[in-house]
Image 1 (cartoon, rainbow, N blue to C red):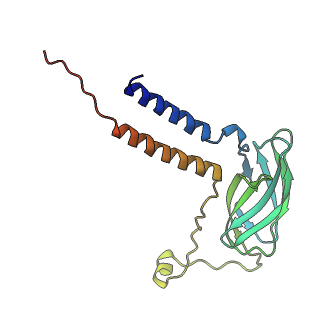
Image 2: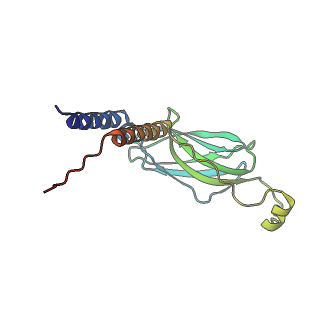
Image 3: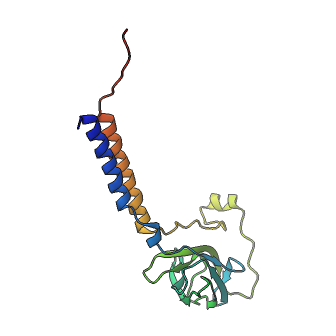
Length: 186
C-alpha cells in the first residue's frame, strides 16, 4: 500500500472512531414541551402545567431554577400519549425574580424548560419601574428580564469537544501531507 492510501485509510479510521464516540441520539431522553397559561407567576399560587412529546410512562421532576436557587415543585408521571397535565404550588420561600421552569428525568437530565418571572404575592399595586436611563445613571438594577444561562446536557458538550479536537487533529494531518501538483510539460 502506498503512502497516499495509508493516509486515506488513517483519515477514514479516525473519522469512524470519532463517530463511534459521539453520543447516540436514541439513547437520550425525548425532549418535550412545557406549557403554562402565563409566564408571570406569583409566590404561593397554584400553577397548572401541561407537558407533551415526552417518553411515555416517564417520571419527571418539575422545579423552578434561577439565580436565587432551585425550588422543587413535584413529580409528574407522563401518560401513554407522551403528555401530562398537573397543578403545582409555587413555594412561599421562593424569592421573586427570573427563573426557568424545568422538567428533569429521573437521572437529572433536562428534558424541557420554560422561562418564567416570579413576583411576590402582594395586595398593593406595584410601583412603576424607573426608566432604564435613570437606573444606569444610578447604578441600580432595572426592571428588564434577567437572561439566565441554559443548562446543557454534559454528553452534548463532551461530544462537541471531541468533534472540535478531532477536527483540529485531522486538519493538522491534512496540512502536513505534501501537496501534489501534476501538470504536463510537453
